[in-house]
Image 1 (cartoon, rainbow, N blue to C red):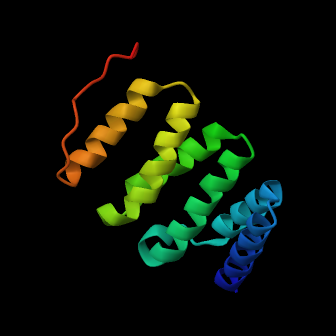
Image 2: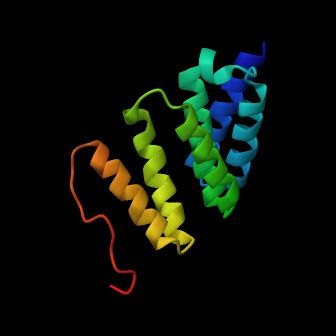
Length: 128
């Protein structure tokens, strides 16, 4: 069954992460995601979220920032609740910062913190 194979590939990917073999992890997690049905976000939400986020982290660890960024955008578009988005936002801000996109990173932080009732300045001076 495809879902069983997806689960096995997910486990292999997580084991590879545990061994710091991010290239293998990326391969296993990509395969796991490809084995899920087309409607996986609707019918296999938890598994989709786990695999997609793990794949984003593995891609980032392999220096494939674009793949990681694209995966994170997909996750944010599919998440059902704010709590599920928080780890994704954290990694997204890390990536934006690493890419030198300080204003976008700060704006994203501002938006997230505003949603949980925290207040920080709307903008900062990039020279500071």
